[in-house]
Amino acid sequence: MKTYAAVDLGASSGRVMVGRVGPDSLELTEAHRFPNRPVRTPEGLRWDILALYAGVLDGLRAAGAATDGHLDSVGIDSWAVDYGLLDADGALLGNPVHYRDARTEGVAEKVWATVPAAELYASTGLQYAPFNTLYQLAAARDSAQLAHAERLLLVPDLLSYWLTGLQGTELTNASTTQLIEPRTRDWSYDIASRLGIDLGLFAPLRQPGDPAGVLRAEVVEETGLRGPVAVTVVGSHDTASAVAAVPAVAERFAYICTGTWSLAGVELAAPVLSEASRGANFTNELGLDGTVRYLRNIMGLWLLQECVRAWGEPELGDLLRGAARVPALRSVVDTGDAAFLAPGRMPERIADACRRSGQPVPESRAEITRCILDSLALAHRRAVVDAQALADHPVDVVHIVGGGTRNALLCQLTADACGLPVVAGPTEAAALGNVLVQARAHGLVGDLAGMRGLLARTQPSTRYEPQGDTARWRAVEARLAAR
Image (tube, rainbow, N blue to C red; front, top):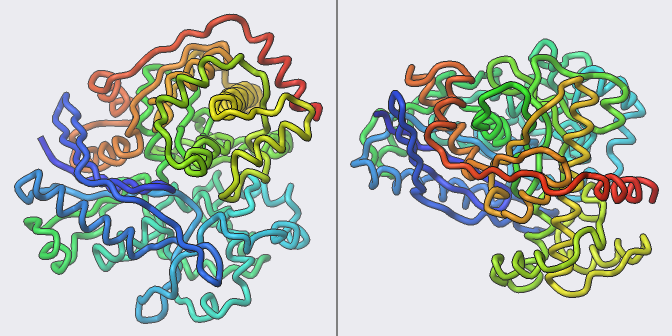
């Protein structure tokens, strides 16, 4: 048995998990969990990166306390696209900007005036999202911080740098910047040059499984660990780690990584760069072992999280039991609507969207919750159906991993909407994928299929069979598309 710490940072919380891996065993326990609370400053919305780093150190200290101070390796994954800028001395130039900050509003159109959207997609294969790193850099072009920056590190690479003193840019996360060419799995030098983006800001690319150094002596002393402790490059985009932890035993599967976002799609050997794919806003992000994560970003449980926050944090189980009693598909919204991207007043915004579209306006908390879950299931259906058609990749089962696996109503609604069985689990997929890449670097597991086989044998899951036919879902889908 070897012991690994997986630092897994989400948009609303971070956690440090301890994974123990043997030849046919895989155990995961939580060592420490901490909030991730963005801060609105006079300059805009920012990540509190120092609080996150403190949470990581506290987590490593807790992991050491649970393992007699011994860890074989540490790996870090987080959300994508955001970054920190360093000066010539390696010091951080301000807190990283939050991807929900308003600075990128209207920037895409300016970028497209230089590189048309169709050409940008044909080169990078990345969906349009206003917060892609490319648009963030375009928005920051005349800023003092960027002018003084010598290095740009994506969030997990920044934390790894603070732990080890070494810099790198992990590939799966780099593929979300809209500056990577998915066919070559290298930088898109032409796109960067035409947009005036200096790729020299980025540290050299690293692959999942590469060594990232060892914990600095000061970190070892502060956390009480017994050094030396290796740091291993994992799929540092949390979705890359989560997809690696899909316990699929056959190739004909779709996946939905659920949490603040839902990432729904299929795993491919090559990108899909067609104009139809761009029109459907599918993205080609890089995964482990030469794979492509062909998926659509869906607003996800963010809508429900914001409603729960607005309601004063009521018990989620009570909300879901109430929602289950509300008639299905009474009201639905387009979860991809940019009107839902910013925080605040989410119940009112959902009600307004239903009112504008001539649907019954959900008023109670149960009705609003049911509207959100029906709308998410419908978005899941559209993504799974579209991915199969665009990639010519039929599927027989949908795997749901991540926090949404705890939401039995959402899982059943997704099965009903897709007309396919849903296998839900594992919940901590990103942390498990993180741990397994570290274990593979130590020779404990084999290829991606071997990793998934171990997950299927050791991690619990729940299967949901579709109920009824999909005709009603198709009708609501058509109604929503016509608005």
